[in-house]
Image (cartoon, rainbow over all chains, first blue to last red):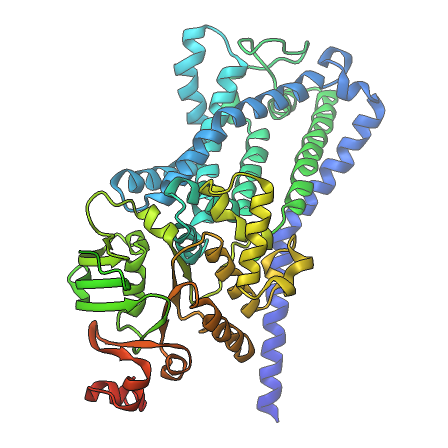
Length: 277
Length: 256
């Protein structure tokens, strides 16, 4: 009998330990969400709608919101098509020399320090052009985004069972159509998840924008070749200021960033229908 | 010089993966509009040979084919032959029922026609799909579910959907790789009954590891063992008086 009890106690102990560790791991996330919401909401309530629409001089972060949207959109337009092509190539030719090099490079690029990407784009575009710009910022973000999209694409396609590939070819469908019209759509959920995660990631990036986007908060951006601000860059600037009012404003901006992130991420993630194999 | 009484004819067919020879000097003739069962234990090369008949073996880069395979007299390994054209003429059904999971029942049957641009109008497409589903004995069961996804179908229904997908292309030959291996007994019986109907119009090559299945459904049978074609002939004759000791051992279950 006693042996039996010890076994049960051990089992319980294990369960409790694992549960405790899981809570410990998730706790910071809830803490961040709660703190940002708590601190941010009071700022936004105090300023009213102007906080979203006004310029910095009026007590608002409007230009930063528009800047984040412009940067994210343009970087997606530049990065996603190339990255999808790279991902499909890495999936389709995994054993070719270029395929192997591509896969290795993608793994390195995934973890590449983002500030170095900023420096690189500064050398490449900002210095020759003589100004920070939307284009430079978006290019830096596109470079950061591409390996995520490519790796997610290649991974989710390679998880599709080989039998579907055989079935597609067995119908006399050529290689390009098999990949684009059959295998990629079956892997749709994984590919879109990759797009979403990388878009959300670049929407919140700060370091690569420091030397590329510059910052613009007193007026709305009106040209792709002029400097632009972003919410994350604004938070970085505001927190460096000694003024308490600026810190409060940073909390408000953080809440806006978080809401944009969650509002984009959660509905799309939930609406992606899983393809049942 | 075309030998038109045969749907498929192999001449000194050899297939290897790297240094590993999996099909050795096979000469075989498969008559038109019959069910030809290719039987043998696991790993004897049956599936490999079947995949050479429509050249999807080429998806495996290591596989090398030499010799000839003639479909209705034409050597499909002759230089200049487009493998996608060969594949359009030979429908394939797989061991694991694999309708495309992201497409509806209707779209699954339509996909080959659409991607190969083989139909001109929506009406023609719909007619062809109803015809193919009817031919695969599935229409009555899915008539109200054409817009549903195949994940809702049973294993046997999925496999008949795959058969319909192949038939929609109007092939002359149906290649079936252990089509009932993952299907329950009732589904298996339906598919076997379907073979009797289909052989009126098509030549069927059925790979099976089950001698009883070969006996039930085939007109001719070939016994493949470790890449060698041990024996080939009329099913009745081979099961009653096998010409080789190996065949006899296999049929009595001594050879696994």
